[in-house]
Image (cartoon, rainbow, N blue to C red):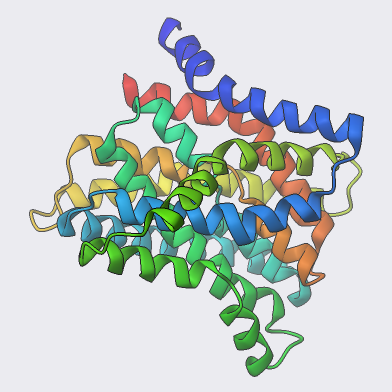
Length: 314
């Protein structure tokens, strides 16, 4: 119990405090969530992704194993979501929102600080989380946009929207400049670091502001779908991750060490990403449902994430 309480106090509560500050500020001042979201979406998020990819040493061995884990994990998770959609006979217009609520998890403004707290800012586990964050930033800005628009927009319009997302340019640029050891001029490097350093605090505050504008109701007409999405995200996620890392450890070609195992499982246990809400609001695709999933999964993650870290410690 002492370990459990220590994890809760030292790893999860600090995140909750920042989120609570965002909720409080919104309740007092009614902050503009759209402005905060655009700051995170177009400035802070691309900046930290670029900065982490540019500055973090990531070996080819780690890159290949993390990417292998990610694609197998996402394939299995996608299969679980599709099964739930078919069993529930979810309307076609809502299917995209349900998929996004499970497949897109908060690997950035929740996952990065959680990783730094859980692993004492270990550069190795941070490199694992950076790669997960990279993929979780790329997919919502490509597949996610397609997913919520495929039933109402033409492929050309969807493609134009995807090409307007800054993250898809920040990722290859960060990799290329790091690979070829190209030095960034001080005049650009300093403001880039300012933007990257502002990410975690601003993102957690933004998450709090978003949650502060929501209201969970037990009479929500789609409450069962909300609960299914939350269970798949918070419980199904780490269980599937455990299965994937177990399979990888049984194969000599994909053998991963215990520290990577822990980092990958922790990365899969975080709540639904705000990107699912932003996509739902931006493209008018079940925004209320998406908001309910983010609110409930973030609230319950205080317990579930603590349990995951505790089980990994013992």
